[in-house]
Image (tube, rainbow, N blue to C red; front, side, top):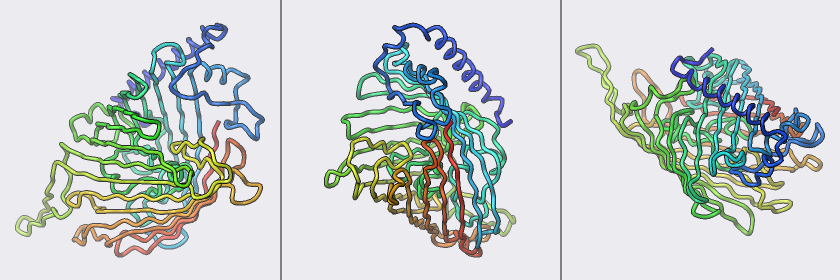
Length: 449
């Protein structure tokens, strides 16, 4: 079981939270006053409905689950199954299967009547099986969701680990503070925000390759959130540079820090919804290898590496509906699904520090749609292209090409409100001079319990 000793405190905290929640739920289950809380940080999910239409397979648990949600306690469990086959090219042709389990507990302490403006989130994850990421011939995962959480060996199973555990405290309607363990791959974009679990599978069509070096998947962090208007929000974060997927992260303090600031905005074009994000990442107090700093010493027969303490990256991503069947303001660009029937465009651009990053700049563009086939209103699809410019690393120990690029097309079939089956095809130009370009077919199944 991959939970390091210094991470056991997170397990103990989670158990304590669960016991507290269950005790609170029992004590207040029949208290009318406890159900009158009409304000909370998050909206209350709806677990009702017939089995084929509702959002969760197990429904409202005879009313108990909905009752808890009305009081500020929500529990989610998602199962993700992926299959991919390299049918041509790459390091090695062949297939792989992977399974991810995602457990989430949210305590809206304001709705619970305990702490005004406060929210606690806990996320546990499990990962099993293998992926074709290492054989694809590209630098970043072609199956993004199954690449995380990290383990000491890339495809080693992660039985259970806590990747998020944080407290969010709003001090006013416009300003809040966050402290704890977070994950960093969520993108506020209507068409590429699925973190690889939904929408596109390829990392570079979900997240900017330019900032991958500076954004650990799971890490300790402190953040400040400012929302000056309904259309704008600004988040600035200090976090450890080292990944802490299977540890507490406390031992990583002082081993490098990333300062990240993101401004999210909402806009419209011809009254159609749109928006985007601008992000700046700055890493410091770390050992970043200089790209051109590999020195061969013939006299001593050794290799030395120059390092620097700092690195940076800058990205922008945007999304815009160009046609909708029925326009609505009910768009959540952070939920990982296209909310409106219609068509939309997305784009993403990133530049990075050429002294430390093997990727000097990158971009991706694409088109997404929902309800294109008559009678299939909840089905979605996407077509995307990415390009990354690589540094000149034609050296004895590493021979990269001058660029990598790829195409991906997916069609996501809504089987039920709680189950989605995605068919996926990718073509990737190899990042290595001696490795053939790869063609990958795949399928994934998402079930929300």
